[in-house]
Amino acid sequence: MQRVLRLSLIATIAYVVLTLVAGLRAHSLALVSEAGHNASDALAIVLSFVAVWFQTRPATDQKTFGYQRAGVLAAFLNALTLILIAGWIALEAMHRFSLPSIVQPRIMMFVAAAGVLMNGIIAAMLWRVSHDVNIRSVFIHMLGDTLSTAAVIAGGLAILLTGRTWIDPALSLGIAALILWSSVSIVRETLNILLEGTPRGISLVDIRSTLAAIDGVEDVHDLHVWSLGSNLHALSSHITIADIPPSESNLILDRINVVLRERFRIHHTTLQFEHVVCEVAHGCLVSVEEQAAHHHHGHAH
Image (tube, rainbow, N blue to C red; front, top):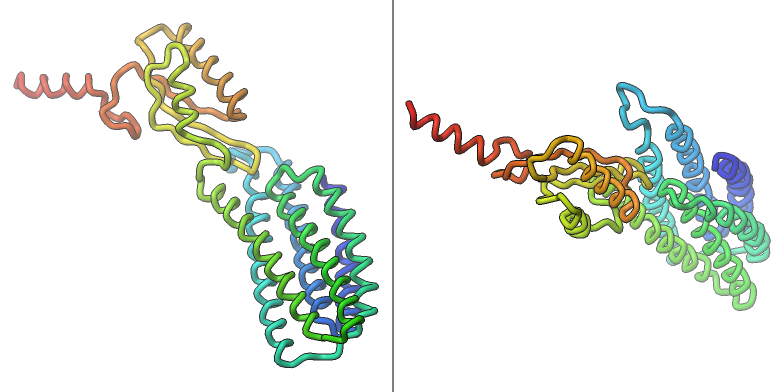
């Protein structure tokens, strides 16, 4: 994963320099916006690189879960920078509509063709490891680049054939919309992880009914599921069982963990067994039996 990111970074920085110089020479906002987009890609790769390094570090007494969220945080920051870049490109494009400038389409097409090739190769390499939200944010950056650079080639050809310079800012608006659309979905997913939301694709109703159906489980409450990183989920719950010896309750615990692992891919669990009826679903601080005993004791005085 780190090798793919390193190669991607070197190629992207080289292409940013090429696009910026060519964009300024050709007076093409589409190319300059491509340079901006690619500069954000370079930043995205750096952030992901740092996050991947952090994620491999072991857990400590201070960071008991290790640095699992580093990648999620990197993806969140990446997506925010992309939204800002999309806004800047859109504003520049609007400005270009009112003040058109002469564009050199041949330079546009030549540079964009090199970009399609480079971004396409990087996107293909990242696709193979894009199951992590951090890497997926970089993959979406690169895929967006490949598509927008292909659009710049089409735009260059259209300007060459028709001489209409408004095509350049129109393309830039399309690129900005594409960047915005892909960024918002990453912001939503990463925010859900950072705010300890239920992981995407997991239903608490499903988990609750599946666990309740396990032999020996009488009730499931105070159930929480959250993500530590983009692929590592954790669960905690209170489980009501009969008043049985620990050796028997261990069998129930094993059954629960097997189901959670195999059906829901949840490997990190904290389960608390109880054999009393809870009056409060959250926390089960005072059992109904204890409360009744306390009440009775109070009357005896």
